[in-house]
Amino acid sequence: MHTIQKHTNKLIINTTGNQNSTQQHQIEIENLWSFQRREVEQAHDFKNGLFPLARVRKMMKVEEDVDRISAEVPVVLAKACDLFIRNVTLQSWHQAQKNKRSIIQRQDINSTMDSFRDACHNIEYFKRLMSEA
Image 1: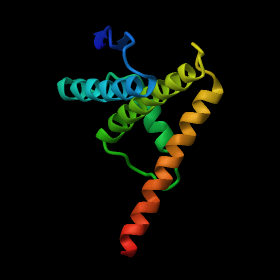
Image 2 (image 1 turned 45 degrees about the horizontal axis):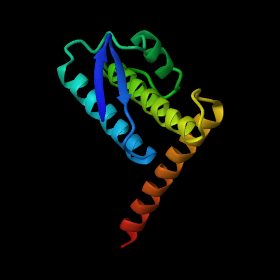
Image 3 (image 1 turned 120 degrees about the vertical axis):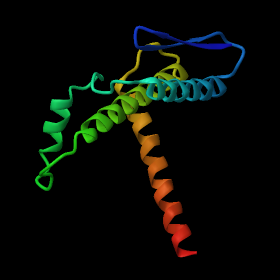
Image 4 (image 1 turned 60 degrees about the vertical axis):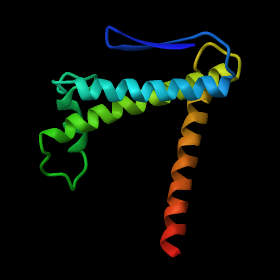
């Protein structure tokens, strides 16, 4: 049984074990994304996120080609960074659990990032394959 609770802007996943690790991990990922979707749909003020918008805008302007940035772009980018970090954290936590550890280590994050790179590579491969057909 899995339950999700929103508690002071945190996602809490409680698990009690009748399922194997892979099923549990898949359910946690699905819960994370459905929680995030509901949070975005119900949000009225996106400007008070985890990342300061002025800092996001400043990082965007580091690129020489970027002259002007519309107001909504830093907001969307900040939310995308938040979602990315949450996803990496959850995937890395799963890696740590798979290795029977309760602390996320660098190798867990590296393994997670490798799987993301592999997934991106596969997407690009299939896009090329489909465009050739």
